[in-house]
Image (cartoon, rainbow, N blue to C red):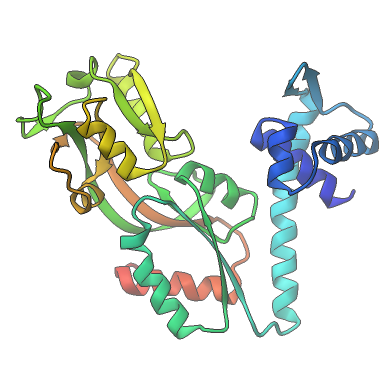
Amino acid sequence: MEFRPLRVFVEVVRQGGFSQAAKTVFSTQSTVSKAVKQLEDELGVPLLNRIGHRSTLTAAGEVVYRRGVKLLADREDLLAELDEVRGLKRGILRLGLPPVGSSTLFAPLFAVYRQRYPGIEVRLVEHGSDQLEESLRTGEIDFAAALLPTSQDFGWEPIRREPLVVLLAYHHPLSAKCSVSLAELKDTPFILFDSGFALHRIIIDASRHANFEPNVVACSSQVDFMIELVGAGVGVTFLPRMIANQRRHPGVRHVLLDEPGMEWIMAMAWRRGAYLSEAAKAWLELVREIHGTE
């Protein structure tokens, strides 16, 4: 079996369609369709049910996708090990970082790493935590910054623990309180991070646990834009206290979110049992050194 058609198929499933997958693999939609057809012909079973512009996995497709993700990750591990057996002098570290908090939490680590290991090429990928976890699971990156709790598939080292705060416009009736619960905000519109961010999922799940479906009026990956929307009275948003304090706005108040067990806990995660290159081991050692874990 060739790996390229398998990788294309996995991307079609992950991206939710042929056109989106074509952008990810830097190819045309026609080429992506042919690659999936080639894989189906080779395996002798249909992998996708094509209904108009939508495609859903067949039973065989679910098996191939699950096994394919692991095969592709194992292939990346194999190539990394072979590189080091051949005596690769210039290592590569593939690092996934989120847009939120990276400047504070990871820029200092990155600077020390570059100073100690100038010959190592660092390839950065920036997405929300949930999307980074998918890239980690497929072996596209060595480490991902992830919010805890995370999958049991991953090992992790804690980086930072912060309470969540609610950002409300000054004229909001709850803005004078010291803390608020999600239930108190059920009639207020929510401004959330995009769905690829773990904090989006965390807020939605917690709201449903509080017996209401939040009215999400806007989603964005831009923190400053979200804060401006709050200041304009569009709705409320949620941030780790550390990030909120760095972006003070004259028309916005920060109120502690009073929800048991809801904290923003950032960690550096990797796949359990995955091969870690020397470059990756050096990064993990630095994380443990700076943040004092064993």
